[in-house]
Amino acid sequence: MAKRLPLIAGNWKMNNNHLEAIALVQKLAFGLNDKDYDNAEVVVLPPFTDLRSVQTLVDGDRLKIGYGAQDVSAHDKGAYTGEISGSMLAKLDCSYVLAGHSERREYHNEDDALVNAKVKAAYRHGIVPILCVGEGLEVRKAGRQVEHVLAQLDGALKEVTAEQAERIVVAYEPVWAIGTGEVATPEDAQEVCSAIRVRLAELYSPEVAGAVRVLYGGSVKGDNAPGIMAKEDVDGALVGGACLKADEFVKVIRFGGE
Ligand SMILES: O=C[C@H](O)COP(=O)(O)O
Image (cartoon, rainbow, N blue to C red):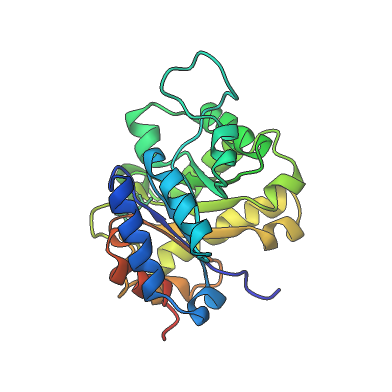
């Protein structure tokens, strides 16, 4: 099967107000050319408060940059103070939403059941989930990373149909590599991304497994992206710190060279 179109997604986390968001997306767009967009799908994931500004800029300037959110409520509407529903994100033309990012699993006690509910909520509103899975350092040291990640995958995909799963994006983000500069080796990334793809074939079919894009995330930078992206079962990157600097993010997007 031809390799899937790579997806390079920048997770801004809690950075950039709506004015800084406009400046960063404009600088990113200025740094990219048509060949870049042919070689990879480019997506930014700003804080909620920036989404309307990003939508206006992308629409107004007809930018080829996609965008999405970093979280979504498991509920569609109602008395859920502080939450943002999938229908609200869909109205802002969000294409993607993160589900199960390790920082939400850790700081907001999000378990597999809640991640599964958020994945289903995203699908209800026509938004593609970027499902984040990954092990901590202790699990890695015990050599149980594949087992841990597959348990997260299974938990997040309960009641998700094959038609839905075919569109999902899975991001393998070893927690010990996030924000640490300790990037996984290409071999580490391939081992787990390949296991994710095998599991998807078992849960659904080889066709579904072949369609799903599996990303790597965790200290991805312009200099380490090419080695990781060269791996057969790695279809892109979920980038944190490096996406906050337009020129560095462009280097990641150009992982395959000019
Ligand atoms: O969502 C992005 C990941 O948490 C990776 O962040 P990082 O590139 O700063 O390590």
